[in-house]
Amino acid sequence: MYPSPFVYHAPASVDEALTLLARLPEAKVLAGGQSLIPLMNLGLAQPGVVVDINGLPGLDGVTEADGHLRIGALVRHHALQTSLTIQRRCPILAEAASLIGNIRVRHRGTLGGSLAHADPAAELPLVAVALGATLEIRRAEGTREVPAEEFFCGYLTTNLTPGEMVTGVGLPVFGPATGHGLAELVRRAGDFAIVAACAILDVDDAGRCGHVSLAVGGVGPQPLRMRRAEALLAGRTLTDPLIKEAAGTVPDEVSPESDIHASAAYRRAMARVMAYRALTMARTRAGTSWLTP
Amino acid sequence: METAAAAAPEPVRLSFVLNGHPVEAWVAPYETLLAVLRDTLGATEAKCGCGEGVCGTCTVLLDGAPINACLILGVQVRGRAVTTVKGLGTEGTLHPLQRAFVAHEAAQCGFCTPGMLLVAHAFLRDHPHPTRDEIRAAIAGNLCRCTGYTRIIDAIEASAGMREDPSGSTV
Image (tube, rainbow over all chains, first blue to last red; front, side, top):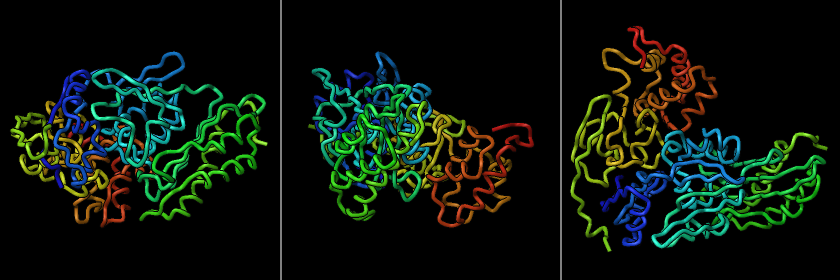
């Protein structure tokens, strides 16, 4: 139950890391290790080369500028959960981090690592898609930015190419009228969700919904935005029947598979329930100057 | 390209602080901290359970924060402070939390106990007056297959707010 032998590199700078990754395209990047090392302990991953990026300076910051948050790839879940900046400016991220695994995993696991691992039922990829996050990706030749929705390509698959690594994430800052909801179906605290939904929306003084984003996870190879539901809600007053109607469009938008945890039909049914709960939670938290009809 | 077949990494010298004492060992860079603790340093109080970070029995504190020793490489703790359950108290002078576990008979087979104690210790440091539900949530990532958890929660609850060691020292 220990990793197979590998060659270990611990570069001291981002440039050094990128040079190594360019030279060793088969190398696996080791960030928090809370997904990669389990896979190695179980023999499911046997990389010949590991590039440990934990010593890289400049990847563990949280900064705010021009209405955006920039979070370094090495910011750990526990820091996402406890950072006052994130709690105030992007509370959905703090809430999502608090639901991950257990306290030990949260002390080691990183934002960049979780996104690059791309588990379709994980909290942070779901929230990144719902938020419209942008991933900053670097390689030796330069930097590119990719919207989260394009970054996730399938089960444990991203559009990272050999030689690249995630170095940071850009997120929009919540406004005073922004509400968020995160609902997940789990059998035990800290498990990966069977189905999860994340809603982020703005409500104006008249109670009308402005920007709205709804994403679901665990019901397909990657987190998915629910455009039909969003189109139903945008510009309208968020009554309970309207939210029910929007959530009702979700089962037809997803194609889950059956596995040991749940059947496809159950996941489909629960996707509606989780979407309803997430939207209701977001509506309750959004704005303050109007009452639920 | 470097491959696993070509990989025969030389052992490296690793030094860190274990339970307050500097230790040194020759380790392979692919060895987990748990392997280094158990197989090289003889610190078998850190147990090997699931290897996936789920069961909690390999819990150690890294610079005071609970982590899975099975999910970090030994070389990653270079120069840092690692605490196992043996760093909480000694056989003659148990930590108040350990005494509470004894008083409440919170250990049955004992396999989960080191991890439970370390997670509870870190939790109580940050939450000195927890509710029972907060205690339940705090140890949700530590699995016990014997006790049904009730006595463990009793012990942690009893220990909360009684952090002073009778000898006058605090841990």
